[in-house]
Length: 487
Image (tube, rainbow, N blue to C red; front, side, top):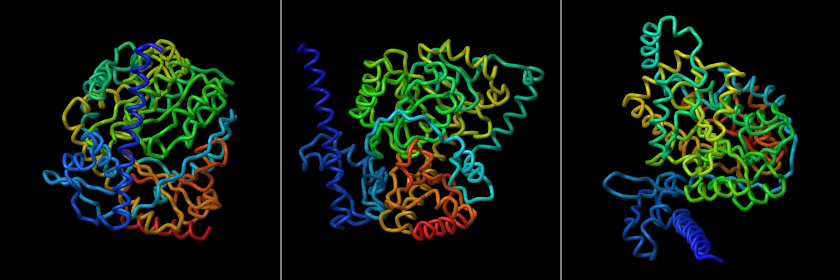
């Protein structure tokens, strides 16, 4: 064994020990909170003091405190320190981890998705199904004023076809913003698309052909499964921890057994679980896939909606081969109705650009120009800060309400960003039936059956927290909890 190899192995073992250590420290503190040794309002030792007490590094204590903050057990008070949250110990347990199967399944969810979502997305329903947010969370007035001016200034160019790759002004802003996410993207790999969905579809069309195997996390966003079905791909699902993400051991086992062409993943604030993959694991994940020659399509749609202090880096930041295709859009952060997305294609960029030209020619010029101007100023960052604060508060409200209202045995995810919760009822509960009963009461949810090729999640559902929990929505959630108890 070479010295370099030995060093890499030792570093890998050290990272794993560090992960175990901070998680063990966090679990110890949870035990103290849940047994009421530490109570709501109690101040925890400072990071430096606790590191001395436990004889661990400052970084280990910081990661443990951050983990507990994300789970709702701690809150940070500026200039004061870490305190036990009023919500501490009142949250439902985290969802369970699915068993591994690695079956290469044909996907058949489109008909079911269409049947359910056509009704769930009805604006007259309590909006717990569709993954969107209250209109007041978006800068509609500011965008309208920019759009009016852009329309006047663009003149005839505003209604003509634009460059297939996207307008130069928006491409410049995308490149500039990428730097803040730890990326250096060349202009020759960026492409503006009609939302993140088109970006993912173009990437998969460039990387796969009908009959190929696509790896996805389990559970996985139903839109991924619909896309795979439309392209004739077979899907292999990899068990995914609801707090840390996909298991690298299971991922490698799936690669060896199924010989996939690509891995479609959502590592930053996963839909529907809400986790974020740690940087060290992202690095290992990208390296593992590169060793096996498996391309990556990364959905970073929720990356700007972090609850922590800093935006997590995408997988693309650790890409050394150009085989990670990064996809995102402004749909969850600025303007859902504009349908403006983008991708960074790495070494596959030229192939993807040709597919874009053959598919939709270009993306709405006026929407691109409006967004380019909006994100170029400081107002966009102020908006994002407020949006993150709103979503964090709303997710906490819904999490506590689920723990209080839903029947015994209910589990709920601990999102670290975004505005979605994954709710797991007791085994034997049927959320397809719950969805039907809820629709009859004007309440929309998305049953877990849509997030897998099989029936692994028949007792789960996704709950949207994008709207404040008050008034009619609070009553609707109480009704939904009662229906769940009657199953």
